[in-house]
Length: 128
Image 1 (spheres, rainbow, N blue to C red):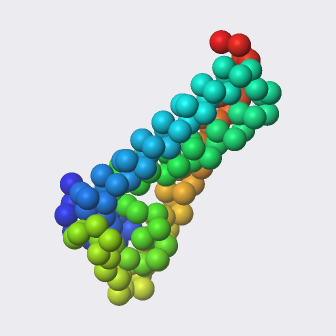
Image 2: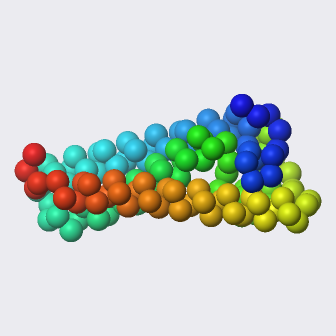
């Protein structure tokens, strides 16, 4: 695991990574409790589309933690390897472009994962 900024590859340290893991876990728990509630209440199939949002939160947190790269920091041109919340600016324009490209890639991956998972839940039978 890198402990320094690498343009387009790594912009967060251990504390920030743990933060993203917690976000992923919270999103997943919210998805599970919501899905269980929808199935228990035999809600209309269309209601399952709403599960996309907690799945997106879980996906973004998970992808960021795996890639050691913060989506928001990538778009803002910042990074953090120190204390939580103590961010530094990326000064090189080429590095900022690489970070934005990685941030877009993370957003796309999370969107794909959340969409696929939502589709799977959507096609499940109403009564399990």
